[in-house]
Amino acid sequence: MKMTEPKHFADLALRGKLSRNVPMSKHTSWRAGGVAERMYQPADLDDLLVFLRGLPVDEPLYAVGLGSNLLVRDRGLRGTVLLLHGALNGLRLEVDGCVYAEAGVPGAKLARFAALHNLRGAEFFAGIPGTVGGMLAMNAGCYGSETWEKVLRVQTVNKRGETFMRMPADYETGYRHVALRPAPQSSDRTTSHSARQPNNYGQAAGFLPRGRGGEREERFSTPVAEEWFIAAWLKFEAGDGGISRQKIKELLGKRIESQPLNLPNAGSVFRNPPGDYAARLIESCGLKGKQIGGAQVSEKHANFIVNIGGATAADIESLINKVRAVVLQQAGIDLHPEVKIIGEAA
Ligand SMILES: Cc1cc2nc3c(=O)[nH]c(=O)nc-3n(C[C@H](O)[C@H](O)[C@H](O)COP(=O)(O)OP(=O)(O)OC[C@H]3O[C@@H](n4cnc5c(N)ncnc54)[C@H](O)[C@@H]3O)c2cc1C
Image 1 (cartoon, protein in one colour):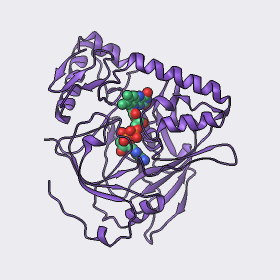
Image 2: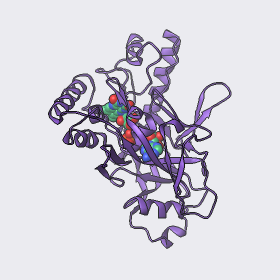
Image 3: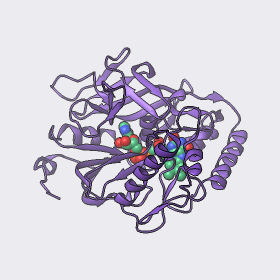
């Protein structure tokens, strides 16, 4: 991979951690994939803004939380990965009773924090092994609850280091789908540290509006128009911490029973099609246990692909494509991946 270090990185007064040639297998739950040319883990929000303001406009940029929904192809990523887990960790109760959580806060920590403050409705976050940023980007959910149902407002940042306060109405949200609407209805630019004109019409990270064919196109590194989540204000109802803790325990127990948590995986690989379950379709096509290299369709949960040892990203992606093709051929249903696949193919 070509390494061209932008000179200015050395000139910026950065307090975070800049690393080079970072194996993304260390930062994804599949424990597979290529190397990121650069990775920056900011010290805090101010440090992130300094970093972004110094970034060349053509630098490809990727936000990563806990990498629990992510496959990085074997030839890796050119550009910079912003590692927000372990970085933006702010979590507090606001005076109006809502919870302020920064993008790097893990779901389990958020669920425990809400229970500690006798708030109910956050229990489901405990079982999602991602960060607040990743859960906002994915509209992660389970057991009848979804992330965006709880959102009062979010703060985002674009590549120029300009921050925005955005309301749920600014986004189109659905089942594992989040996209910033083309014209914001109720947003405010909260901070601009740039003399340049802010772009208020950006897309939520990774998404473009639906293409002409009605399909949603996706992209991950287009400059200027993208925004990333840096914090959310979440609303929960008054409850009983003891009951919430018990509920968390039960939900985690259900996962241990039904999911192959002993092997590296990225949760559900495919979205459920309307009125059906991807796992049921995959199992009915006889694909449980199907293996390519070190990647295997889990025997325990057919919508999980597990790394049984030494899987490459190509093994995993080939198996995803194989499952999709077989289900289409045998059941006539085109399954759409929920996991995000980025980087250069081998
Ligand atoms: C065992 C297991 C169980 C799971 N169960 C569930 C479940 O029940 N429900 C569910 O919905 N998901 C589930 N998942 C999938 C995953 O945990 C969620 O999608 C989670 O929201 C991903 O968060 P993350 O921080 O790991 O994101 P990452 O995997 O790091 O990133 C995922 C996507 O979000 C983007 N992103 C990350 N941070 C930001 C940010 N700050 N701003 C903008 N974009 C960002 C990335 O660029 C990428 O496109 C499961 C995964 C595993 C491994």
